[in-house]
Image (cartoon, rainbow, N blue to C red; front, top):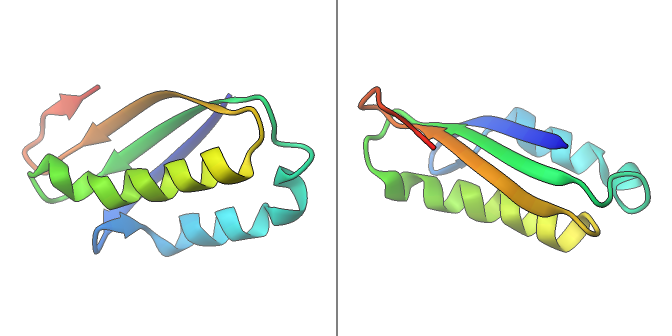
Amino acid sequence: MIVFATPIYFCTIDGQMKTSIDRTVPRYTEEITNQDIYFIMTAADSEKTSLTRTLEAFRGFTEDCLSGTKKAGVIYELGHGKLEK
């Protein structure tokens, strides 16, 4: 299982998460395969649509670059303080 977690800044993943993804290039072609993937996101915005680009970025990376992985779950927190699953 692999969990990706990030706050949402300007409608996408934060810089640290992007750097982490960029630096896994040597490993993800062979070592990070056939994993269940979970995404955790937080946003100050109260609109669920603010999560769209972040989820697309995560899915693009995991579906296009990580062989055999599948999205197992998404957990997010919006600015209104209600935890969604």
